[in-house]
Length: 372
Ligand SMILES: Cc1cc2nc3c(=O)[nH]c(=O)nc-3n(C[C@H](O)[C@H](O)[C@H](O)COP(=O)(O)OP(=O)(O)OC[C@H]3O[C@@H](n4cnc5c(N)ncnc54)[C@H](O)[C@@H]3O)c2cc1C
Image 1 (cartoon, rainbow, N blue to C red):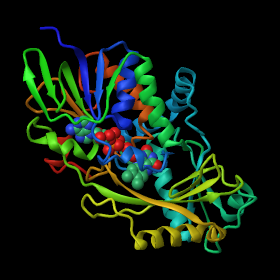
Image 2: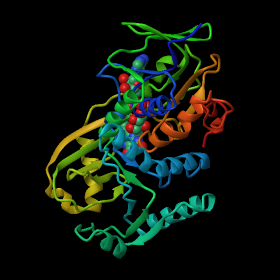
Image 3: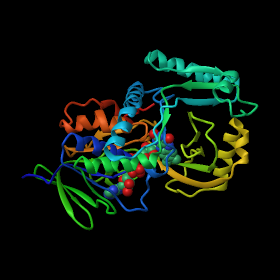
Image 4: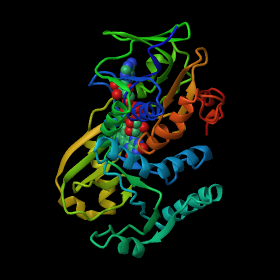
């Protein structure tokens, strides 16, 4: 029996949107069904970094797809702008890691060298304080900053514009987007699956579950090997000031609009997305060590989100153990990997998901003790 769609995607966060965009461009018939407004959405709370440094230090294939995605980002941003008119504010600015002691800098340098040994094109520079001062002529660095690491591989983007551009691009490429309704069940049909929401049902040959932390709702019924350890991150944003900090940085960046984004916490608090004064203190203390003059700026907003995190921090790309054609992704770093998801990953799905190029990313690595 002919199904209405080739692929139905459960979840329209940046992961579902990016893969959907790639599939729609490949002329697949795709529907994205995205849940209610109050749903946990990492995609609307993240820091917008396209971050390569240190990613996959113990997982070389993860490092490889992260690099690949960072390389594909300029073309994705340009394509989205041309197609949708939305400027995602993508900048391949390079990224800084600030170090507060020689020991920290030494450890960071050793780690970067180890990564460069695996992938010789992993580019980084170990910088002393003077070098950072020259790179940041309008910023007074904190007294403890002894330098740090810089890599031209990193960049940043406005994550909300990026999500809007991906979903708009998906629609303009022929994809169907339905928002404000949750998929309640996915049941097998001959040659495919039926997805049921409160309002309608649709049929699709294959399904991609990209429901972030809510993917766990499908783990049992669809037999997905899924282990998630959601982690809260709190960020803050200041009033606008003149542009002085062009680089991306782990936990600190200046938006195109001039606001400074400060963050971020790493908290194991179940599924709470509350903001706390202790979180604000932690973030403020940390960024003031790097740039003490940030203390003069008023903080205008604080928010929290839940990372879609696996125990080793590496994504899961997998299929159901019992239902062929049910795929799923659980992924922290969905901003960084968006160009990979919209590109090579979507192409692989569009081509029928033949072979298993992502076998090292299976969820069952947590069952076998292979995770590092
Ligand atoms: C504080 C913080 C900072 C971060 N910073 C960065 C960063 O700087 N760089 C980076 O690369 N990554 C960052 N991330 C990670 C990034 O935000 C996530 O990897 C990404 O948002 C995951 O996207 P997703 O689409 O899988 O999940 P989500 O954004 O959670 O989206 C899942 C979607 O699925 C929908 N859904 C759930 N259940 C159903 C259902 N039954 N039916 C239909 N729809 C459903 C929800 O409504 C939701 O829209 C950060 C995350 C956090 C929390």
